[in-house]
Length: 59
Image (cartoon, rainbow, N blue to C red; front, side, top):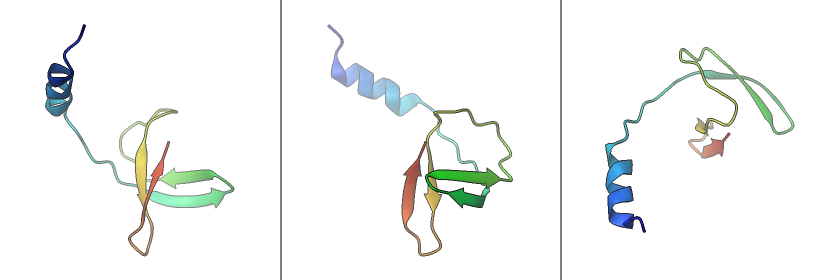
């Protein structure tokens, strides 16, 4: 059995990074983003920050 403490410890060691872009279009639930410098893949998760500061989690 895996110890949950060791799993959490592993997660803390993962590096995080920030990628910035600009919302180019919205159609229904689809958000098109331009200007992203790094490659993103289908299923990657990100946060879209609205003009009023709300954070919208996206995949």
